[in-house]
Image (tube, rainbow, N blue to C red):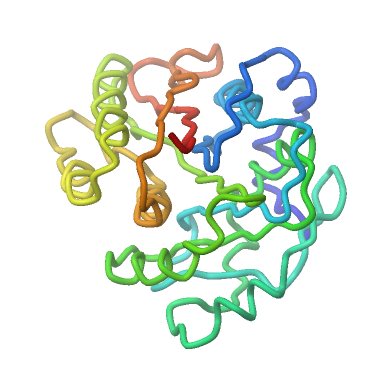
Length: 266
């Protein structure tokens, strides 16, 4: 599958290698990360920073990318039966995992929902420039119903850790003012650090206390899928934060927030 035009526009000719070079971080060797999926002029340095926490010498069998659909309405989650063709070359989707996940699972379906959505595609160039990997496995969650999220999470749990990496594609607060975004985003971060599913879900939907706030976290269902997999304590580290108001291309009246967050075993 080829990159869609929207994703190409989000990349905007920005050199991913240069972004990685300009945003060094200590290697944490995480089992999972949260990375933004906005235009690179807004959040590319956040993505580069969180990817720089990954050991470039570690060889991964599979890199799972979980996103929440931004362009299609459907229930359950979609998986891809094709490979990705990016500006940096082809990325192979592990079809053995596809076969495994489809057994006795009505919530996962093959689909073309990926073709017009940027939330996975803008992550891929960072994988290609930073990570040694064999396969990718993209998953796109549709209309979030918590019991389906848990079912999907239970199917994926056996792949967490080892020589697999999970990437959650998500931005944070959407469209509050600059100062309200900072307050809201760090409230959400504190909930993520607690790793408590019920409190996280309750907090995500308590967003009407800020003017113009549409969502605290556009990929919350993807993160909840990861959170439900944790069966031991993890170390949650905020690597970098900013919002679109910090970019010369954005204003401060209506912004989107971006975190780079890592999850490592304690």
